[in-house]
Image (tube, helix red, strand yellow):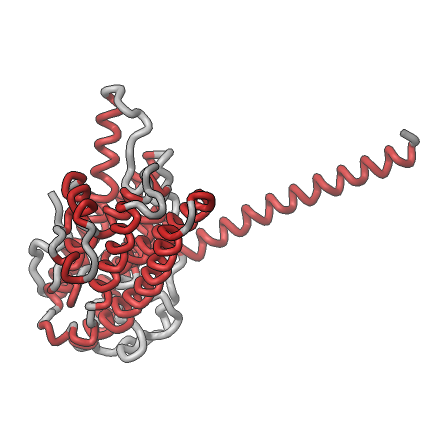
Length: 367
């Protein structure tokens, strides 16, 4: 190699190295910026919050949170129904690629469901929707019996118990080696998707206020949702994994929704469904006819500024911790649990006192 070529090679390598370093620095800056955005609250200094009636708060939550999330879930379920039908009618040659698409679409639908159902209110509470389509644990013996029956249509599916259908049944079937086109399992899975679609389509959020929900019920559902995420979804499996690791059993541990690599995403979706109802996220004062009135705005409208400021502080702490969750690093999960517990404790004590509501059991309370 002549000196000129050597020089050109060295120059090219040096330029490549410079671009790699610049790209790395840019990535660090972007990550830092994202963390800063997550940690920096909206500036409330020039925002004048009006007094909100309880009915305004509840109607805004029903219309601009639950109804919106229900529409998003409906779209994902329709796509899941199409994907399932296509998969179950294809020949065996194209199934591997289609199964990946099917699992990916299931994941989208389930994450949309978790965000919607994180705080159970209105028709979801009245119709016990969570039990209908997300009953856990799945009962395999009942699922096998349902598959043998091959139910078709709304009336036939109504005779199938919740422990044998819903999202858990799909989650199980979509991971089985014998889930192939033309099989009873495939046909049943499509009926399950259609059944979930019908249940979600029955959620009428325009009637939420007419159901008689008040601030006490709503507040308790918010607290219960925080407890469910902290304990049932995160701390309970964390402690179980620690116990099993100590006994030299499955040291890697098992986490919720890990079959689809959805654990951290599932937690994030559930938190997003809660966070949206706690903090002001826009740059303007929310209006009940166009936006959700979160708990923070309601407190500020009541003149309880210190409570609102502290609520924001603890909510942001949870948000930052949740963004760092990594099931390969249990300490990160523990940090999120800790932040959620602080938030829950503050809601139960100080905010409940400020709103003059009592803490009761909610639909999200577990063992």
